[in-house]
Length: 71
Image 1 (tube, helix red, strand yellow):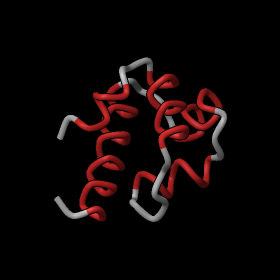
Image 2 (cartoon, helix red, strand yellow):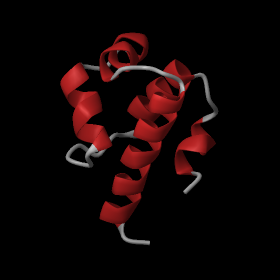
Image 3 (cartoon, helix red, strand yellow):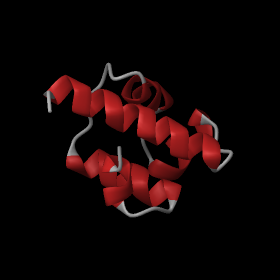
Image 4 (cartoon, one colour):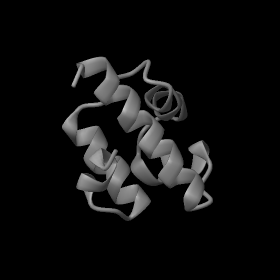
């Protein structure tokens, strides 16, 4: 699988889970300790998050990190 496609899929997955949990990007940013701009850019695959950021996002979403790769 192409690297860009993986990041695009992760971004879409984060957005899907966030919306399913009725969280705004602002609330996810607050809970994860990441900036709103960074969260937004991850969701549209402009930013490519590292492992530490993905762990913070998974924790903020109250999911296991492997769920971010379930696509």
